[in-house]
Amino acid sequence: MRPVTAGAWRRALVTGGAGFVGSHLCGRLLDAGTDVVCLDNLATGSRANVADLERRRGFRFVRADATDTRALRGLPGRFDLVLHFACPASPVDYLRLPLETLDVGSTGTRNALERAHADGARFLLASTSEVYGDPLEHPQRESYWGNVNPVGPRSVYDESKRFAEALVTADRQVHGTDAAIVRIFNTYGPRMRTGDGRAVPTFIAQALDGMPLTVAGDGGQTRSLCYVDDTVRGVLALAASGESGPVNIGGGDEITMLELARRIVGLTGSGSRIRFVERPVDDPARRRPDTALARERLGWRPEVGWNEGLERTIGWFAHAVAA
Image (cartoon, rainbow, N blue to C red):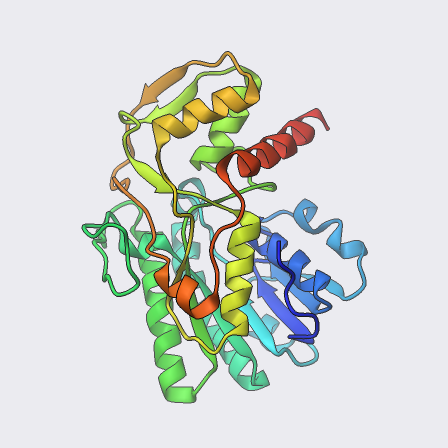
């Protein structure tokens, strides 16, 4: 993975920094010489994700909620980069925490923007491919407005992120905040939770346990997965640029969920079978980003291939289970 330019930022605030992507982001910033304050309420994140980072100079963990205005205002010192990654991101989590998901997209985003504006910091919102809903355009370009059910079971996450994007846009126009939006597509890698309901950790855990892999519907729905190191590199490339976005960051190799399950069975050497289960309501049929903007404006493209990424992820899960 290409390093972030050392000294690009002196001090960064990462909300949701103990989560899956957030913890990798914190580590990459530390590697680049940036001091990091990781703020997380641990509703879906884990202190274990940043345990190694807490032993490193320049890292500080703060257990607090991004919706707590006083907590963000009270953080000492000045930041020159604010990355807002706090939000339940898997269906299991945002269906369990629907009001909290809406709160962090609204109040949490407003608080993080306020802190960035007060400090004169660069701000970056972690948005999502879910703003496109069950897309009628394929692949999805940043100019596509989406096909979202505002009252469906996934709406708390989809609309939380859509509102957050509107809030960032309005804040940039009114206050002149140096703000950008990244739309992150399906990302996988070490530190995902086995019980978070997403396909990669679910399939890997089932394969390692010798259990049937539960594929939703007929398995024909597609996703374009991106290894976490590539996602983090894209996020930081946008943060370091003068672009405001939104910019898609995601994998370019589209795959069906049935084929993904079969690949994981093969890579783990498992004897697991495939078991088809009911497909969730509003589950997108196809999902693949158009990443032309990221290539042209950021010089970014995924570098970690399927086999390498899945092997790294399987190795991490196997070690975590053994431990």
